[in-house]
Every structure is written in structure tokens, then in C-alpha cells.
Amino acid sequence: MVPVIALVGRPNVGKSTLFNRLTKSRDAIVADVSGLTRDRQYGEAVWQGKPYIVVDTGGISGDEEGLDLMMAGQSLQAIEEADAVLFLVDARAGRTAGDEQIAAHLRKRNKHTYLIANKIDGADPDAILGEFATLGLGQPLGIAAAHGRNINPMLDAVLNDE
Ligand code: GDP
Ligand code: MG
View (cartoon, rainbow, N blue to C red):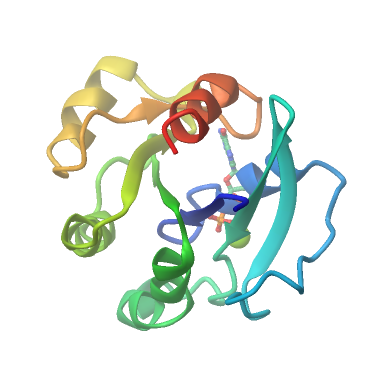
């Protein structure tokens, strides 16, 4: 089975940037994977010779007040379909109520969940660690999706854990 990795998090944390980096120009939509539907964006990617599928849950019109809707909708579905969840938070914005809401849901699910603090390029790494560790999902891993920073250690942790 090809592992499915879902990118979840508030709007604007960098999910699509990470999706594009992982899938590069290979924007093929995977339509034929059993159990997956097409209302989320699926991409194929390869890590150390092994294929995996990455799911971008970006389709929610960027409405910050729509968090309930998001959690009830496609992000929730993506979490259920996934073998592993990358929960992205914004290291520059800091922890928000939305992050706490999503974290509370993820803590209840029996999924491999990785807390990823994106935009580490614009943040103090020590402050980030302390701030996001309190979400109850382990220590955050700081990345910069836009710059490719720490992407390989992240994939190593996620895909060599499956
Ligand atoms: P999404 O709504 O979660 O899909 O977020 P996007 O991928 O659309 O990114 C939202 C904004 O954050 C864009 O302006 C990106 O360029 C920016 N962004 C994404 N990753 C990084 C990063 O690693 N560092 C910085 N500084 N900005 C980033
Ligand atoms: Mg997006």
C-alpha cells in the first residue's frame, strides 16, 4: 500500500506551498486510488525511491471563521483517509485558537500525527518550540516549505515511521 499523507492546518499556514514542493511539477491528480475522492487535491511524490501520496486540504476559500466547517468537511475526511497527518502551524503567526481546535481533534484520532511549524525562517526557533509543544502533539518540527528547509528530515521522520 502506498502511504497517504494529509496536510492539515489553518488557512495560510503553507499547506499548498508544501504540497507543491513535495509533488514538484508532478501535479497529477490521483483519481484511481481506492477509497479516495476527488474533492481534495492529491499528488504523487517519491521519497528515497518509495512512492507516497500527499493530500492538500486547501479548498476551503480561506475563511478564518470557517474552522468548524473545515473540521467537519474535507480536512476531517482527509485525516480519516490518511496513514499519517502533517499538522501545519504558522511559526510566524504563533499559536492560535484555530490551532488548538484542530489539535484537540487530532489528539482524539488514532493517527500518526506530526506537528510541523512552517515559516521557521521568520521565527525564533526556541520560542516556537515552547509555544507549540503545549498543543499536546509532541515537539514541533520547524520547516520552511517556501525555502525547502528541513523537508528531508521531516519526510524521514514521517515515511520511515510507517
Ligand atoms: P495554505 O493556505 O495553508 O495552503 O498556505 P499557502 O501555501 O497558500 O501559503 C500561504 C502564504 O505563506 C503564502 O504567501 C506563502 O508564500 C507563504 N509561505 C509558505 N511557506 C512559507 C515559508 O516557509 N516561509 C515563509 N516566510 N512564508 C511561507
Ligand atoms: Mg492552500
